[in-house]
Image (cartoon, rainbow, N blue to C red):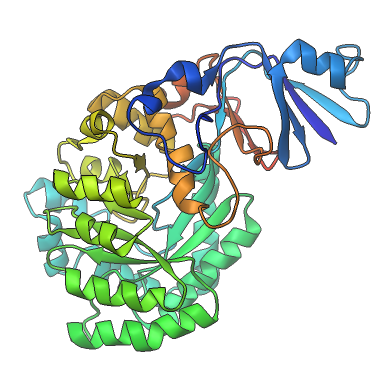
Length: 431
């Protein structure tokens, strides 16, 4: 059955130019070219958007019997009450699956201990690894589905999920298989990244572990088709640039592209390396230098900022997002959901970006829809993160007539309804 969304408020379609590429510079701020005014309708046929146009024109052509009845067996009319419509959100950096609890680390940070110091005294990644290794896969699936449901209630329709809390072959396979089950059982698109190179387990030297990743884990992960990308925590104190290049190069030979953790705490040249390696994205990038940002823009490596991370670490959220707009460098936002940053809400990230960094809501919206979608779906032939004829009907109906409302309810979801591939999969009705 066709569905006609009638009586839309603003429709932030985000579709201008070539939708397969991210928005940047002046284009990311051009609200006039990115938002339809109120009064439009959206006709959905099965999973795709068939037509977008003035609502009365669509009613006359496809539902001339409306409003006497809301459906006729072929077309159903849904009056969205003048509320705004935006694309489904795309969260391109999450650590969805793990077990354990690290709530005690907040007091350590408040007392002055750094991320690295907490890791050295038994906290951090390895604490989660120890809990996750002993967790049954069923438990990991159940907790992952609960977290994904929370993301869905906040409008996320596509999500990247990393392994990385196993750090041995069996545990990494267990995590990636759990992600595969979650993907099948949720309406969200969930795409897996192998992050075996997240930290170094105590049972091996660093060289032994890098060799283990390449000779033991990588062939199995590839043979089982468990991941779409490889990731490496390329950071001072963790994996060096040379080790990162070795792992990424080996992964390329198995058909895995890369999306990398880089330059979170210091500028170690990680973004420059990601650009040279052709990574689809380089994430964190809080400390990267301008030359590497230019290289990323030229190579097509999308910088992904994670404002929630400095927020939970008690740091200033002084990410150079405004400069990226001024310099025409493409960027995305993501949640970095993990045991240390349990944020499932991209609207919360949008609130941090607008209220604390000071970027326009429409630019922040591009950074959680179209821009990350170009890194998530670039080799599939699909165009997501936009509202356009012929594209998948991944949509959020907001609580307000203004599309800018998507990021103005921190702590509460701004979503009234979420459609995934044309089906209503979430109904909040908070406002």
